[in-house]
Length: 109
Image (cartoon, rainbow, N blue to C red; front, side, top):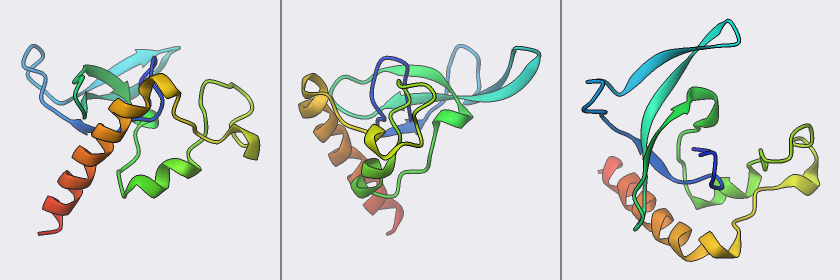
């Protein structure tokens, strides 16, 4: 999922105990869209509501190489805008990838 302050990050949909649900509809600019309550995987677990358009199913670490850098509006389709993990997030991101790989392997059992 693409969180506002982070690069694309392995996450999982989770239950929001306050709203008693895992998804909700949100109106924005006169159009409704679905948001999901997500938990970022890794050592610094954060939870947030994220638009369905900012979520893709996790298939493995390899897929992050082809994701666009959504911070650069209007340039997402250019090859030079590939997703990169900033150095300050790299160690935590690698831990989150390990969690995601573990979840993925459990799902295949």
